[in-house]
Amino acid sequence: MAFVVVRQKGFTVQCVVTVQPDLVSRQMVKFVAGLSRESIIDVQGLVSVPSVPIKGTTQQVEVQVRKLHCISKAMPTLPINIEDAARSEKEIEEALQAGEQLVRVNQDTRLNYRVLDMRTPANQGIFHIQHEVGSLFRKFLQSEGFEEIHTPKLIAGTSEGGSAVFKLDYKGQPACLAQSPQLHKQMAICGDKERVFEVGPVFRAEDSYTHRHLCEFVGLDVEMEIKKHYSEVMDIVDRLFVTMFDHLNEKCKKELDAVRRQYPFEPLKYLRKTLRLRFEEGVQMLKEAGVEVDPYGDLNTESEKKLGQLVLEKYGTEFYILHRYPLAVRPFYTMPCYDDAKYSNSFDVFIRGEEIISGAQRVHVPELLEERAKACGIDVNTITTYIDSFRYGAPPHGGFGVGLERVVMLFCGLNNIRKTSLFPRDPLRLAP
Ligand code: 4AD
Image (tube, rainbow, N blue to C red):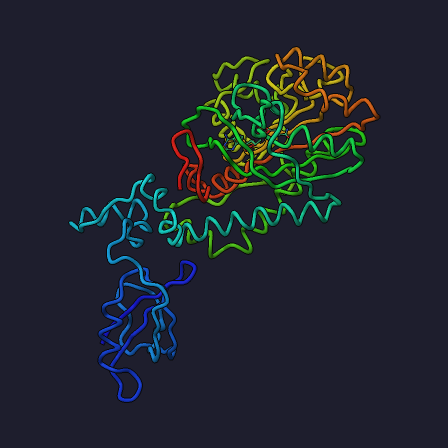
């Protein structure tokens, strides 16, 4: 007799191979017993309820094997043991206390052998959820009249300013990898596209060794004409994300459970109508809680987390929009507030106290755009074609950018963005 546990997409079932005249030979049982873990097999058999319950699992069925073919043999020793890699921190502690010999799989090892690491139920869940987020983003926007565009990733100047840019040589001409589709998605609006979105790679050369920064991530970008007020852009954020969270909770129960089993987390608390808080109100809430912040500066990671807690206590939500940011901390293309130019028509969106989106109304007046670029220290010669796009008639418009990996990380309450990037790129990692 031999037993094999077969797994497909994170779910497993036990197969039993017993010698049976004319059906299963002794040789066959021997062959199965010698198969290496993680090999790919094809099995044909009868699904049955075992006479004795299967030890250590809640599974109620097993497969009585009739035929078994090995399609692809795995190496006899593997760099990661999937069962060990799938254990929660609590299970590891318990196993160690019970004197079990097990290897704690660290993050670098997981990422070095990602094709094995991906096989754990939690990772199957995470990347299925990631797929659902991307697919819902597309579906929702299409249903709202947005069209998908594709903008270049090789560009002449920086799209977000600053030093976080990968520079390269473009046939003798200085160029860089796009830090976002910002400039071109706006130019698409100037080209009368009205409502657009893009799903594509975004490159940031920042030297950030944090749990939430990558050097390459997937940007979900939106840009649209504004009829009256930048709240129209926030309306899209609101409906898009409430629809998305509802769908994930309803349709990805199995996957969320698989993630939760290894990395316990509480379901995200969000309101039917997303809370919109003015930056000034946020500053006031922090002040009342004894946290001093510059009313015209940016919030640091710590104050963002603290504000997240305060918002949860006061409004009962872990998903909210903070808007009307000080102009000084926003990119050059952000529209100043009409009533007070110290502030801007812009917003950030948070999940569990961490940013997942930044958005704004954009400057569509070329003279003001040029002035703002210069004030932000940008060489306008590198973006003349962008600024010129607004000289032929340009509608008021706005939009936002979402980091896909951050959405999945924070929705699932995970502690590191590398868990939600299939093959992460950070300052220390360019492979696999
Ligand atoms: O805040 P960011 O830099 O804004 C823009 O790129 C604007 N062009 C968006 C707009 O339309 N106004 O980036 C947008 C989002 C962030 O909120 C965050 O979720 C994610 O992209 N992000 C990163 N994700 C992973 N690693 C990084 N280094 C990230 N930088 C930003």
